[in-house]
Image (tube, rainbow, N blue to C red; front, side, top):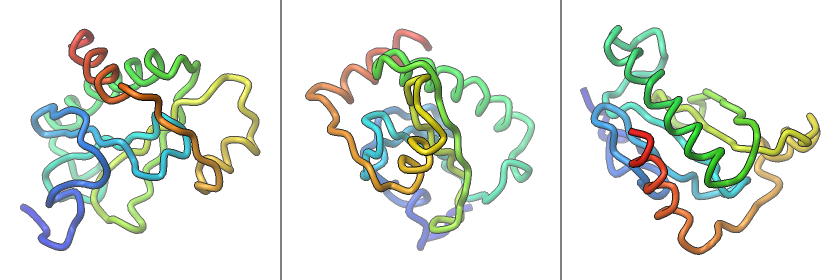
Length: 135
C-alpha cells in the first residue's frame, strides 16, 4: 500500500543509488558525511516489526551489502545506523559511514546535520559498481 503524501512511496528522497526490488538505496541530500545513505522499503510501513518475514530477511541481506559497499567506497571503518521515522514515517534506515576515530561528539554532529562533506566526483558510480560487485 502506498501513501501518496510519503516521500519514500513516491519518487524517493535524495538520489537513487540502487534498486534491490522491495528495497531501495538513496543518498541523503544533506551529506553530513559523503556516504550518508538511506535504505528504504518500497511498501509503506513504519516499523521493522511491520515487515513480513521475507522482507525482514531481505533487509538484512541488502543492509549487509550496502554497508560493506559504503565502507569500501568511503574508506571508513564503521557504520552508524539510525531509524527514526519522525519527519517521514516510512521505514528507512540512515547509514552513516564514519572513521573508527570518530568520537561521540563527532557522531552527534553528524546525526544533527551540523557538518557536511563534499561527495567526490564519481561517488555514485563507484558506489553502484561496488554494490553490483557484491551482489
